[in-house]
Structures are given as structure tokens and as C-alpha cells.
Length: 150
Image (cartoon, rainbow, N blue to C red):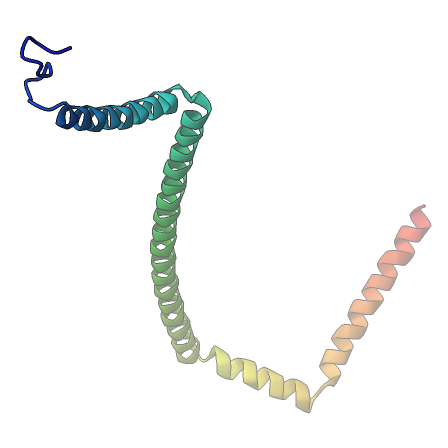
């Protein structure tokens, strides 16, 4: 494929530089074709693409679970803090009410009266024993009357 002057078709005087250029071009074209074939094979590999999609979905799901877990932890910490504050407030109010009730009991003298009654029973236990004996007798009478009715 030379023209009238015997030169190669691409216009160079010698055939060797053209052959080397052609070989280099063929080598580059082969590499490009290899990459294209690999890309097409990857697109045609449905199983591998499906696995990639599954892995992507798994990663997204894990991220969402992690995010939701962090939100729940945050809400739980806030709820615990609020509950703790409410318990402290209720405890404080209860303590105040107990203190007021104690003061009122002291003001009315009910505590002194109860202590006096306790001392009186210690000094003279007979009236307590009489009341207990009367209660036992009353229960006995009730049981006897009920037994006769049957």
C-alpha cells in the first residue's frame, strides 16, 4: 500500500516508524477494549449488582438503626432527668407536709395526751385487762348464740 513514490500511506518515508505507531495504537485500543468489556461484564453481572444493592441497603438500615437508637437514648435520658426532678420536688413537698403535720400535732398537744395515756396504762394495767376480758366474753356469747340458732 504505497503510492507512486514508494512511500507508505501515512506519508512517512520509512515503513518502520509507521509500524511502531500502529502497534502502539493497537496496544492502546486493546487496553480500551479490555476496559469496555470489563465494564459491560460488570453491568451484565446481575448477581453481583444485586449483592452490591443488598450491601448498600444493609448499610443504610444499620445507619438508620444507629440513628434511631441514639434518639431513643436521648429521649430516655431526658425522661429520666425530668422524672428525677419530679421525684425530688415531691419528696421536698412531702417533707414540708410532714414537718407541718408534726408542728400541728405539737400545737394541739395530741402527742402529750398520747404519751400521758401510755403512761397511765403502764401504771394501771387493770382497766386494759378488763376491756380485753369483756371483748373475749362478748365474742364467746356471740358464738354461743349463733350455735343455738343452727
